[in-house]
Every structure is written in structure tokens, then in C-alpha cells.
Length: 159
Image: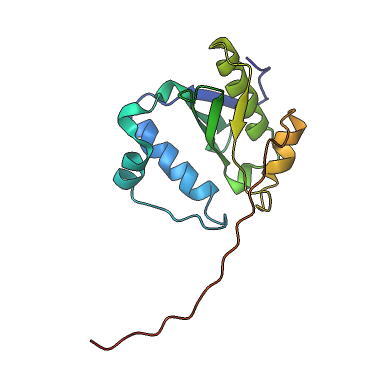
């Protein structure tokens, strides 16, 4: 496991209260992210397939003086690699090593499970500079997807 970051502690997501906190942290961390739409807790939990979620691969990071400030959710059900579903750090806590610590912790957890490859998806244009974080920790581009969209005006129709 990684060397500790001063003032940062991690805990596994073990209880429903922890799961609710993960949900709150992700909503706050991704609030300004392109196309992020918050959902009520129960809907979010169902979308995860919570009955199949390995909650031992979900960690909450706390920062001394600030409290819970980041979260990483991973899964180990892919045949080719471990997968990081979400990594979010509250805006007020960014730049203090929390994301790096969570990422290295996940790498260690996957290595302990015999995984030699870890993947994730990222919006390369997000405002948190997540891409730089991943590249600093040795992750490289495997493939890229470009998404295009157009917004069309829709007129209400009379019934």
C-alpha cells in the first residue's frame, strides 16, 4: 500500500451510512462535471448493482481539519483488468494529494488480488485535471472516444 499522505486517512465503505456518504461525496465532487446528473441515493445504489458491488473496493478519504473529502470506487469483475469506476475529490480539498493517495491505494489493492492492469474512463476535458493525475501515476491512453452532440430545438405540440 502507498505511503501515507500527511493528514489523510482512508476507510473502507462498510456500512449503509458510508455508502450514503460516498453518494454525497460523488455528487459534490462531480457537480460541475460535464453531463453529470445527481440522482437520489436509492436510484444511484440501484444503478450500481449494489447487490453485486464489492464494497471492500470503495474507500473514503478524510483530510484532517476538513473531514471526508474524497472517494474511490473500484470493481474487480472484468476479466482483463481491475477497473476504477469513480474517483472524486471535493474541490476545496484538491491539490493536497488525496486523489494520488486513493489511486495508489487502489493500485495496491488490485496488485494484492493478482491484477497487473488497472483501467478507468475519464473526460479528458474535465476541469479537475484528472488526466494529469492519471498520467503522473503511470497510466497511459489505451483508446479514446470522441463524443459529438447537437442540441435541437423542440417545440411543444398541441394535443
